[in-house]
Image (cartoon, rainbow, N blue to C red; front, side, top):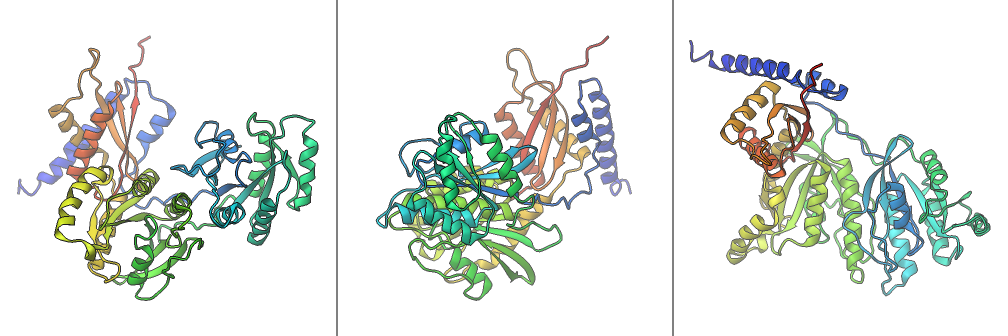
Length: 490
């Protein structure tokens, strides 16, 4: 009988430890936010809704009109690369932003470059991608040059899209230059807002107008907690996303070809797998453009961000027959930064011979260190080999993403961990972890209250041991530290 009651004793011990640590925390300076976090009863809260995608505001315009400068001005920091050369491709094209209490995603569509079809065609194609993925658009025109033929072409796309548009007349650096801006009424997009992105002049009025145009709920779909789980297929061009989607759907839902410059919005596909409905948020429309390799990278980034925003779990497709590329690494970073659950699928496994497999093991260890916790499946989208392993991997990742550790159990685990492996002493001081709680799930986020700064290496050690103890296969884990000092005695 005593053996059977042991688990209850453990629960009692965990609860007592939690209460004792909470009582001890009262000796420290705590703010309202701290107390709200500590008061939350989260232990049964496994159904926290996935945040709805933020509305998307795209900055569109031809090269060198000041789009990246405007992005930096809106963000209040230098994020976008600003160069005089058109065609600068950046790792990130989408940024969380805020204005007048409104949160939104800001998409910078810099990076246009000329191909053999000419700059006009290039601009129009990229504008089409950006417009399709946006809820509202700021169209930037250089007021010192006036409306060009390229601008007129983009205006036609904007009208066809039906999306709300705010016209930005940039490079208006003085009252005298405002006369140039009024000439842009001719574009038929309504009032041109005179702005100097470089100096900040007029950007407040422009953003006020943009917030009126931007819907509060994104048109790109919300995630219902009671609906089918949502899966993003992400990966660089030609890695096999279209083939994989068609194979799991048992029909040709997506056209598979290499037509240059093909663009399409990510499409939601309802697919039944293992007797359950799943929604696949497809980015298979990313095409490799023969004359615009950087452009292809850019399109991939833009579509990947849009797909991840709508999903709960991302399947990162990698080509097992070739080495992991820089573009693969960028896509992996985007997924991890998003906080979504992760499954890695090595496609084209039917093309991998014994020599390649030996090299692949070393590459996985070297190149996939930041997602070594993600379940991996080796598949062939062409033949359908091992696709039955995809659903169990998705289930494991989503279960981990939803997991919550009871506060008492978490603190007992950390107490044992720290006593066996204390934080290093730095400058004669050794920070102590006073209390820990899991602030949320999807993904699991942990908050540590401590007496001093917890080094990044020690945080990684805690994360590694959390995974060993509780699993968390297929989900990123976030650990933040709140340093609190003892109350001064009066």
